[in-house]
Image 1 (tube, one colour):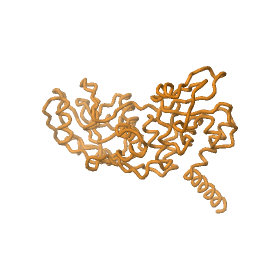
Image 2 (cartoon, helix red, strand yellow; image 1 turned 180 degrees about the horizontal axis):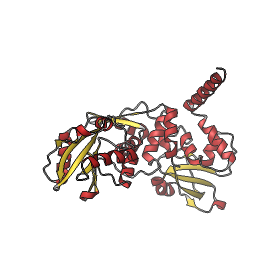
Image 3 (cartoon, rainbow, N blue to C red; image 1 turned 60 degrees about the vertical axis):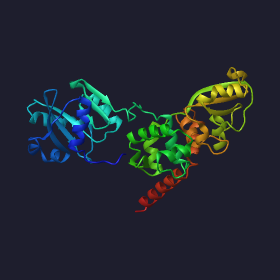
Image 4 (tube, rainbow, N blue to C red; image 1 turned 90 degrees about the vertical axis):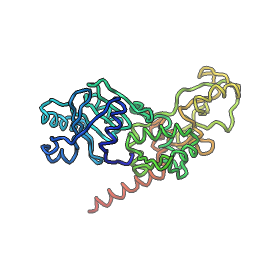
Amino acid sequence: MARERELGTEQLIDYLATNLSANLVMDPSSLQSRLPIVLSRKFKLLDSFIFGRRVVFAVLGAKAQVNPKEVQKQLDVISRMADHKAAVILVAGRLPWPVRARLKEMGIQFVIPDREIFLPNFQLISTDRGHSEVNFGDKFTPSAQVILFGYLLDRTEGAINSSELAASLHITPMSAGRGLDQLEELDLVETSKEGRERHFRFRHDKHELFERARKHIASPVKSTKYVASGFVDDLLVLAGDTALSEMTMLSQKSLTVYAVVANAWKGLVFSRKLIETREETADFIVETWHYDPVSLSSGSLADPLSIYAQFRNSDEPRVKQAVGEVLETMEWWRESKNSEITWQGTNRNM
């Protein structure tokens, strides 16, 4: 999460004046002294006018938490204090995307200086182009997942800024930046600007980070290609069922599975003279992935977390058991389980 700071009135005025193409004047609101003590500690109220209409900006304190339902009730209190004669607009230094999405659904108007304006009653909805404001949905983007897995697998080589991160994972700086954007939105990472570099750190230990991230993890597989002839070499990593059987006690299926990043498939077909066919006549399988499996792999085998991501929702009992075995290869996973067992044993003896 970006380091929080108190929003200055001048910063808010400058941002709105630029986007509204109008001069704004803001004054401390007389409503401030009438606020219940809980709200007076949470909000700083400023009176102003937008297009001739009175507004009250409710500026959220840097450390204040945002629960959309609670905020709606609190802004309603402020609106009633203003006799419903002013539009009450929430202002915050930062709000995670899921919170912003919920505020929009509820029709709560807000401003995040240098990032987003949501003022539908004033026909003004704007997102700053300098920030990635993609609706990420419930699943990680490929770059966010690579960054997360890279950290959990110790592949990031101690990277502390986006440039080092991109270099260690063999992704572009732009991809690293967008991946950090999503991880930050989900409160898994906090970032700060130091000089020209964007520095970052993960907010939790590896086990807690994984547990918080688990619901967002997506399968890396984009498509499955059945190949009748051609040749493969060390440029492709073993993946799919083959990798799962290598990591666990699961029996290997007859066809060997390899993986390659999706945008390299066509070039691979040409350079390796691959011929696609039906499953029953295939000699091997190539999975195309949303991200480059080589960036996370160790040697000729795809990384265990990507294999976990691929098979974690399987309904087949043997596969589900094997997926559990894959997690057991993670030291931080084993340590957490051992700690839990130790705590339970101590608790029983108390």
